[in-house]
Length: 377
Image 1 (tube, rainbow, N blue to C red):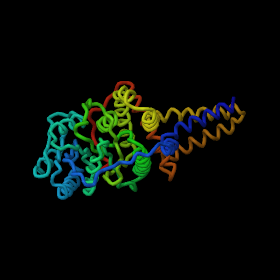
Image 2: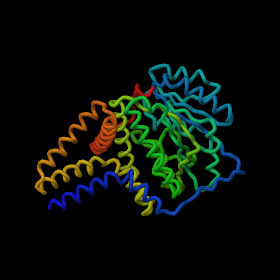
Image 3: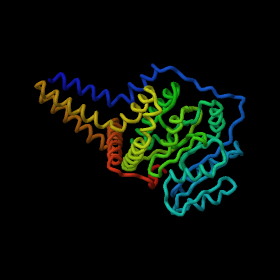
Image 4: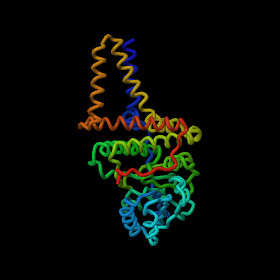
């Protein structure tokens, strides 16, 4: 009995680790599918869009960055949506009439609604989506658009770099997690499509833009629709964006919980189409990359419980008590910010926040609007 419990505990631990360890390793078994952009093809027209709510702290750097982009790419159309901001966001955007066109809202409707309105007004063949607090490498626009000369490519996700990883344990763990995420996306892209794009920087053909319910995660819905319509969504390491991560644990917990809730609601909305459109390989990628992460706390807690039960069944109550005590001490020291343990504590909080967000979604909660975290500025 003890052996069975301990084996089950190991299986649970492997299931928890699969999205981060064995899944990316397993992608080596897939056949490679290189992208074939045509260097001689003319670049398609493009519209760059972003949504803003109370982003006056981020806008000076954003506007300077957009001017650098416009200087190199004068033909790129730029649209900005102000979601009924209550600070100086709207006047700051309106003052840049020579640079961008503002799509204002007299009521808070959320990012998904704002993105849809801008897509409806856009003239470019390619929609470039970004965030108000994200800075794009001006040199990235040409390679980004060049990928669309391959007719199989319907969407391109860029590479995000966090620029404040030295601002504490929360930012450091966030940066570490994102570097792992980028590595997984590179492997997914090499063998087909990535499983969704981050809203900081990605682009799609305007013709592929779907109707997005306002409470769903718009970047996930829009980018996954590319794959559901039979085209590739690739990851481009030469398309780089820069962003500051949140530095306060409370802000990051709320952000992770909100994103997980919206992502899981999006999953339920897209799942019938995913089942119909995806073959075994893409289903494996989606379940490994998305579903198992959302429920990661379940195998982690199950593995810990089964492990303790296995030690007790093996007649090792002192060892079980020592293991539980060490785990509790590590948790308390991690919460106090001790080196290394502080990082592990932040990882655990992220896993907890993600499952709570999924539970929120299962209970019918939705997030259509939210306020940007102060600690990321």
